Length: 150
DNA sequence: GCCAACGTTGGC
DNA sequence: GCCAACGTTGGC
Image 1 (tube, protein in one colour):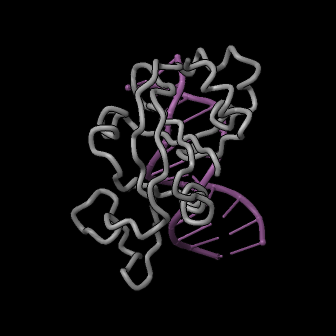
Image 2: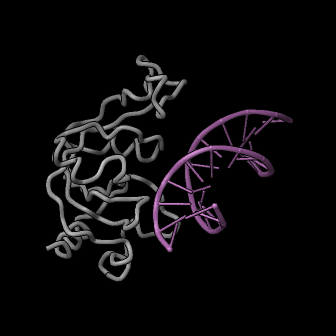
Protein backbone atom coordinates (compact mmCIF):
# COMPACT_ATOMS: atom_id res chain seq x y z
CA UNK A 1 0.00 0.00 0.00
CA UNK A 2 1.47 3.25 -1.18
CA UNK A 3 0.33 6.85 -1.28
CA UNK A 4 0.39 9.40 -4.08
CA UNK A 5 -0.49 12.95 -4.92
CA UNK A 6 -2.06 13.39 -8.35
CA UNK A 7 -2.67 16.75 -9.99
CA UNK A 8 -5.72 17.43 -12.07
CA UNK A 9 -6.99 20.63 -13.57
CA UNK A 10 -10.50 21.01 -12.13
CA UNK A 11 -11.65 22.46 -15.47
CA UNK A 12 -10.81 19.06 -16.94
CA UNK A 13 -11.52 16.63 -14.10
CA UNK A 14 -12.42 17.92 -10.64
CA UNK A 15 -12.79 15.88 -7.46
CA UNK A 16 -16.56 16.11 -7.95
CA UNK A 17 -16.20 14.61 -11.44
CA UNK A 18 -13.95 11.85 -10.11
CA UNK A 19 -16.49 10.90 -7.44
CA UNK A 20 -19.43 11.06 -9.82
CA UNK A 21 -17.72 9.00 -12.52
CA UNK A 22 -16.21 6.37 -10.24
CA UNK A 23 -13.17 4.49 -11.53
CA UNK A 24 -11.95 6.24 -14.68
CA UNK A 25 -8.72 6.20 -16.69
CA UNK A 26 -6.17 8.84 -15.70
CA UNK A 27 -5.38 9.70 -19.30
CA UNK A 28 -3.04 12.30 -20.68
CA UNK A 29 0.12 11.85 -18.62
CA UNK A 30 3.03 12.52 -20.98
CA UNK A 31 5.93 12.57 -18.59
CA UNK A 32 8.10 9.51 -18.16
CA UNK A 33 8.61 9.82 -14.42
CA UNK A 34 4.90 10.10 -13.80
CA UNK A 35 4.21 7.25 -16.21
CA UNK A 36 6.74 5.05 -14.45
CA UNK A 37 5.07 5.62 -11.10
CA UNK A 38 1.80 4.38 -12.57
CA UNK A 39 3.35 1.55 -14.55
CA UNK A 40 5.84 0.23 -12.00
CA UNK A 41 4.60 1.11 -8.56
CA UNK A 42 0.90 1.70 -8.31
CA UNK A 43 -1.34 -1.01 -6.92
CA UNK A 44 -5.09 -1.26 -6.55
CA UNK A 45 -6.11 0.43 -3.31
CA UNK A 46 -3.22 2.88 -3.11
CA UNK A 47 -4.27 6.18 -1.53
CA UNK A 48 -4.39 9.31 -3.65
CA UNK A 49 -4.43 12.94 -2.60
CA UNK A 50 -6.50 14.60 -5.33
CA UNK A 51 -4.89 17.95 -6.10
CA UNK A 52 -6.42 20.77 -8.12
CA UNK A 53 -3.83 22.60 -10.21
CA UNK A 54 -3.83 25.50 -12.67
CA UNK A 55 -6.84 27.09 -11.06
CA UNK A 56 -7.76 29.96 -8.76
CA UNK A 57 -7.12 28.01 -5.57
CA UNK A 58 -4.62 25.20 -6.11
CA UNK A 59 -4.51 22.59 -3.37
CA UNK A 60 -5.71 19.23 -2.13
CA UNK A 61 -9.44 18.92 -2.76
CA UNK A 62 -10.21 15.33 -1.89
CA UNK A 63 -9.22 11.71 -1.51
CA UNK A 64 -9.16 9.13 -4.26
CA UNK A 65 -7.73 5.68 -4.77
CA UNK A 66 -5.99 3.67 -7.42
CA UNK A 67 -8.56 1.35 -8.99
CA UNK A 68 -6.55 -0.69 -11.51
CA UNK A 69 -3.05 -1.67 -12.43
CA UNK A 70 -1.43 0.00 -15.44
CA UNK A 71 -2.58 -0.43 -19.02
CA UNK A 72 -2.08 1.58 -22.23
CA UNK A 73 -3.54 5.09 -22.45
CA UNK A 74 -5.85 4.87 -25.47
CA UNK A 75 -5.62 8.59 -26.22
CA UNK A 76 -2.06 8.13 -27.49
CA UNK A 77 -3.41 6.22 -30.52
CA UNK A 78 -6.15 8.74 -31.33
CA UNK A 79 -5.03 11.13 -34.05
CA UNK A 80 -7.79 13.55 -33.07
CA UNK A 81 -6.80 13.68 -29.41
CA UNK A 82 -4.57 16.40 -28.05
CA UNK A 83 -2.76 13.56 -26.30
CA UNK A 84 -2.00 11.77 -29.55
CA UNK A 85 1.55 10.43 -29.84
CA UNK A 86 2.50 9.57 -33.43
CA UNK A 87 5.36 7.41 -32.20
CA UNK A 88 3.08 5.14 -30.19
CA UNK A 89 1.37 2.08 -31.64
CA UNK A 90 -0.91 -0.48 -29.98
CA UNK A 91 1.92 -3.00 -30.44
CA UNK A 92 4.37 -0.57 -28.87
CA UNK A 93 2.50 1.71 -26.52
CA UNK A 94 4.50 4.47 -24.91
CA UNK A 95 2.03 5.82 -22.35
CA UNK A 96 0.38 3.86 -19.58
CA UNK A 97 -2.26 4.83 -17.06
CA UNK A 98 -4.22 3.47 -14.13
CA UNK A 99 -7.86 3.92 -13.24
CA UNK A 100 -8.52 6.34 -10.39
CA UNK A 101 -11.69 6.45 -8.33
CA UNK A 102 -12.80 9.50 -6.38
CA UNK A 103 -13.56 8.56 -2.76
CA UNK A 104 -14.56 11.75 -0.99
CA UNK A 105 -14.35 15.48 -1.26
CA UNK A 106 -12.57 17.27 1.55
CA UNK A 107 -12.16 20.88 2.51
CA UNK A 108 -9.64 22.61 0.28
CA UNK A 109 -6.16 22.37 1.78
CA UNK A 110 -4.62 25.08 -0.33
CA UNK A 111 -1.04 25.16 -1.50
CA UNK A 112 -0.38 28.29 0.53
CA UNK A 113 -1.79 26.64 3.65
CA UNK A 114 0.22 23.50 3.01
CA UNK A 115 3.39 25.58 2.97
CA UNK A 116 2.75 26.74 6.53
CA UNK A 117 2.97 23.25 8.08
CA UNK A 118 6.42 21.92 8.94
CA UNK A 119 5.08 18.36 8.92
CA UNK A 120 4.29 18.77 5.21
CA UNK A 121 7.53 20.51 4.24
CA UNK A 122 9.05 17.31 2.87
CA UNK A 123 6.27 16.76 0.34
CA UNK A 124 7.58 16.62 -3.22
CA UNK A 125 4.81 18.87 -4.48
CA UNK A 126 6.06 21.65 -2.20
CA UNK A 127 9.64 21.53 -3.41
CA UNK A 128 10.91 24.43 -5.45
CA UNK A 129 10.38 23.93 -9.14
CA UNK A 130 8.44 20.71 -8.66
CA UNK A 131 5.94 20.23 -11.46
CA UNK A 132 5.53 16.49 -11.66
CA UNK A 133 1.85 15.68 -11.94
CA UNK A 134 2.19 12.46 -9.95
CA UNK A 135 4.39 12.32 -6.88
CA UNK A 136 4.86 9.76 -4.12
CA UNK A 137 3.62 10.63 -0.64
CA UNK A 138 5.11 9.02 2.46
CA UNK A 139 2.91 7.34 5.07
CA UNK A 140 3.84 10.13 7.50
CA UNK A 141 2.85 12.84 5.01
CA UNK A 142 -0.40 11.00 4.24
CA UNK A 143 -1.30 10.84 7.93
CA UNK A 144 -0.38 14.47 8.44
CA UNK A 145 -2.52 15.61 5.52
CA UNK A 146 -5.50 13.52 6.64
CA UNK A 147 -5.21 14.98 10.14
CA UNK A 148 -5.36 18.48 8.64
CA UNK A 149 -8.43 17.57 6.61
CA UNK A 150 -10.43 16.40 9.66
C1' DG B 1 -0.02 37.02 -19.31
C1' DC B 2 4.49 36.42 -17.13
C1' DC B 3 8.19 33.69 -16.20
C1' DA B 4 11.07 30.27 -13.50
C1' DA B 5 11.98 25.68 -13.60
C1' DC B 6 12.24 21.71 -15.80
C1' DG B 7 11.77 18.16 -19.68
C1' DT B 8 12.42 16.90 -24.52
C1' DT B 9 14.30 17.18 -29.07
C1' DG B 10 17.61 17.03 -32.45
C1' DG B 11 21.92 18.68 -34.69
C1' DC B 12 26.54 17.89 -34.22
C1' DG C 1 26.96 12.37 -25.29
C1' DC C 2 26.62 17.44 -25.25
C1' DC C 3 23.88 21.27 -25.20
C1' DA C 4 21.08 25.02 -27.39
C1' DA C 5 16.58 25.68 -28.62
C1' DC C 6 12.18 24.90 -27.76
C1' DG C 7 7.96 23.37 -25.28
C1' DT C 8 5.34 22.70 -21.00
C1' DT C 9 3.90 23.27 -16.28
C1' DG C 10 1.78 25.78 -13.02
C1' DG C 11 1.90 29.40 -9.43
C1' DC C 12 1.27 34.07 -9.28
